[in-house]
Image (cartoon, rainbow over all chains, first blue to last red; front, side, top):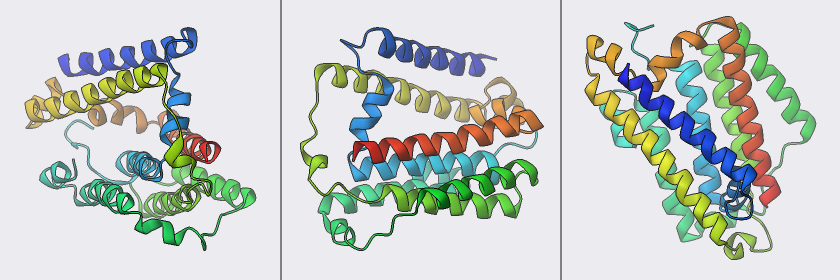
Length: 70
Length: 174
């Protein structure tokens, strides 16, 4: 239970940052703006996309999830 | 992170994360720029067709099956090809930063690090079947949802949509 609460807290933090990025644009860049800046660098671009690819691999292809909880 | 994936007996995952580190290191040397001239860029029609095939296979074939594996690898290669080219005008070296951008980068990095720390904490606290019921990893929490038809559709849409959004960000930025 406490494990799930931790992820919920992080999800709330993400929503708060998205909100601040939308409503305090003069002081805080949105996630999209941040990605625009970060993705200019090839190393960052490839790294982020490899992480995105890994998410697909992890959840759709690999059996990396404990079967006792499935 | 790559070493941790090997530790938890997920070698493919380990290779992916160590591959990221290798690309970062090699990229810093500037050696990769010599491949920029002969790069092939897939057209929009090909990309849309590939995405449609990927979505159909990922939704309608059994999860964890070999068709899913082929499609996920092929999608990764296509996105890699799209994302590789570097701006020809040197924008990558001169793009500026502002205080609001730095503030945002620090905040998002803190949340990302908190997520990684919590994922790692639940992994070690939850070693063993009983422990994992109290301290499930994020994968354990959302796995039952992805096993449902609706969950699979949402997961596939989120993954493919996220990839397109990231690739487009990269292109727009360049």
